[in-house]
Length: 67
Image (cartoon, rainbow, N blue to C red; front, side):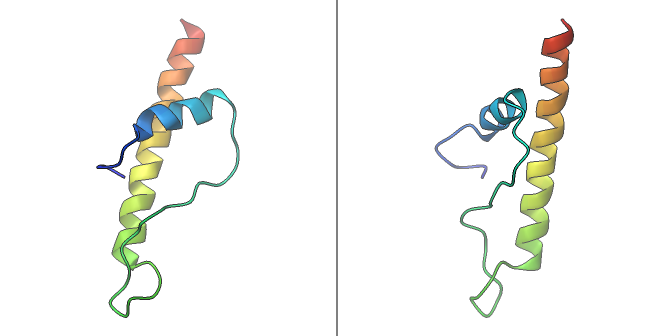
């Protein structure tokens, strides 16, 4: 998420601007030690990262709309 080809924050802002209210999947998460399924630490990290992007995007879009 941090090192991808796309600007995830810009993508999140566009989703907020469009009023998107669906799910977002995490791609390329870290597997657990057995090699199957997402590790708990990976899911917590990515969930926090996405929630931070969403919170910041919502605040920025709200400021744009009230300016």
